[in-house]
Image (tube, rainbow, N blue to C red; front, side, top):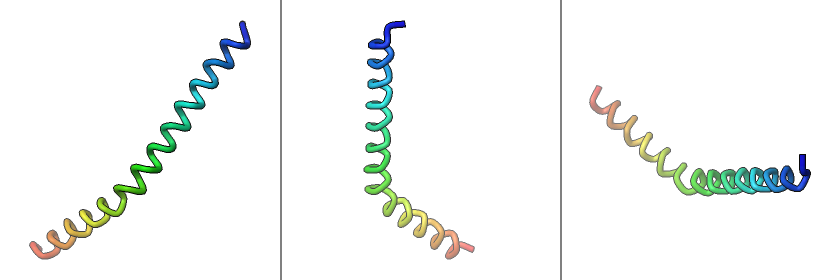
Length: 50
C-alpha cells in the first residue's frame, strides 16, 4: 500500500481527534457551571416539594 495515502488518512484522523478534544474541553469549561447550578436548583426545588 502506498504509505503516503496511509499518512494522509492518519493525519486527517489525528486532526479530527484533536479538534474534537478541543471542542469538548471548551464546551465543558463553559457549560459545566451552568449544569451544576441547574442541578442544584432542581435538587432544592425537589426538596422543597417533599
